[in-house]
Image (cartoon, rainbow, N blue to C red):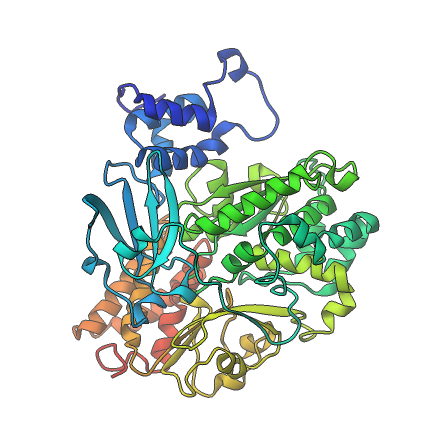
Length: 588
């Protein structure tokens, strides 16, 4: 029974937004009919976005009206709306600027503390808030603008708030993309118009789909498995095993999900792929769908990637118009389509089961595993979930064959890998290198100092690299042997003048704020870790703080539900072992 007090009626503007987002409430008779597949609750997050974009906030009246249409309890919907950083449940300025103060932007010479930015522009009040990493580290210092109302818009910018607001729609500098070896994943970026399906096809696009349809699902599954492709999001799980499990399921309804919620601080490679080669993702997901027997796919893209979202939506629409998606994919008689869903500012939704909950209209909290997504995934059905970079490898494999793919890289880490390199380097950007390339060679390509102050490998969930590690080959097996991690492929370089204590404290703040709070080890551990580092930085450390940090590392890594808690102490522990926190937490 609904326990929240009654509210008034939504405004006419809110009604118009809701009509456009979800239509009117189902007929009462229809609501008693048992329907297969997902109910309408999965429209909750897109509808909340529509209210945020159109009105500027989600009022109690609008939320109540939305809940009536979707048949969702108001208390639960309020819990969803308040879960995300990009949604507001209180009235405020219609324009909000999120100023990145994370690890790459805060060491940039042009960085300004969010508190120093003005809160007005052309007589209009503007909300200014600090933000975790915006995935624009190569364009640092970064800002993200949300504007609501009839002229609703979202865009990223650099510099001051005034520059950001004045620069809406201004062309951004193209990303730096460098391939030292086969440009398998980045070869079309900057060469092919990313908005043109015709140009994509003229440069080899959709040949892989034709090959997949001719080979048949079993041969494609075998080729993906033989290639040795492993997940590029951090877990490095064999892609062929995942696809095979879903294809072999007795369940008829299956899904393919692209995890494009790239939120790891220091990471932006998937954004560059989405902006520069969106049709490759559409083709890759289509191959996955027809291979594992799924008829529906979802791209879950982070809410701050407005430009990338626009590109992938346009690519999906063009593919659908040309018969490459829908009820008869490329004349094969097979059905597969793609829906693009926008995240709302929650790092935890990069965890695959939290992503499923978010898509289904629940709070983005991870689920316990097992069961695994290949058995019980999105809407309780078998689901293939891969990140953008992983999927972009699929056409490559079908083009050159498993043997050709394995000819690059190493036996355990075949192919190429994308690295997001930022910080104190002359050439921040995305670097595609064969697996096995030494770390020092990658740093030299990006123009890093010969002797940097510190290098963080793998983002906030990664580790600081010890001196002498420049010869470590960048492979899954070699970094594991060196007690490092590839993680999401983030490499953040800090110069000698950087205060590493400040960087470590910011990392602990990040995990404290981004923990979903579902499990005690992470909810409490991230707070206690941050408190201990603050004491260390302020010179008020307590005698037991060193042991406390060790204990928190053990408890969070052993007992947390998901990877956020498992890795929340990794950077802190590595900084302590390397002496980067000696003194008052700074290197000097």
